[in-house]
Amino acid sequence: MDREQTVFVVDDDEGIRDGLGMLLATVGQPNEAYGSAAEFLEAYDASRRGCLVLDIRMPRTSGLELQEILNERGSDMPIIFITGHGDIPMAVEAMRRGALDFIRKPFREQDLLDRINEALDVELVRRKRTIVRDDLAAKIDSLTDREKAVFESVADGDMNKLIAFDLGISERTVEVHRANVMKKLGVRTLAELIRIKLAAESLGASD
Image (cartoon, rainbow, N blue to C red; front, top):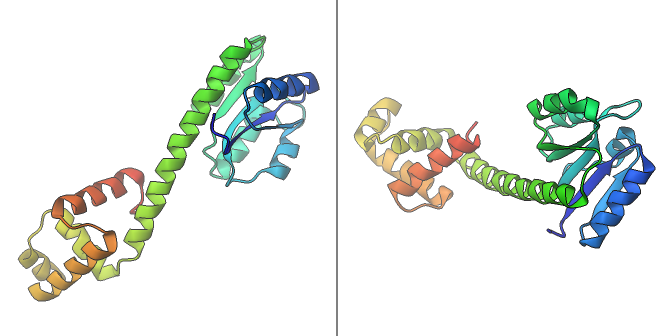
């Protein structure tokens, strides 16, 4: 397990919190336990990595309500819900809202550990995707408006002559802008430039 990732347990049952804490400690997994959604939110730091093991039924703020709050804050932390037999419809609704999985009580410890491992793997992939997206966005944001226009046209396969006509500038100016774009984006070939554009579109980094 990744030592930089923390498993956050939110459950109003002290016995479950203590039990999960000991279970995670036996495999060397950093973890923190909270007795309510309010306690968790008070300590919540969006920059921290990991996953959330969340009881679906809790007094005051339920697990579903906490999930909604986190969604509103833009959190993409994977959530595993702990549910009772009668909570299955709620768990299905939670997954529609983005929860990764749910596990029914009583559960086998290994089943929960397996799901937590999967959640941490998902979080790692999401984190890497975010880093790549932010890096691409920063590079694209470094372009001037004119350079962005040239970037879009070149990546779409337009020739310098057509770009010059569309933008009302000389071909020489297009060449200068094109060279600046290649340098700022850290690419050397047209194929690399096209890949940058496709990647930015798929990751939402060019919005």
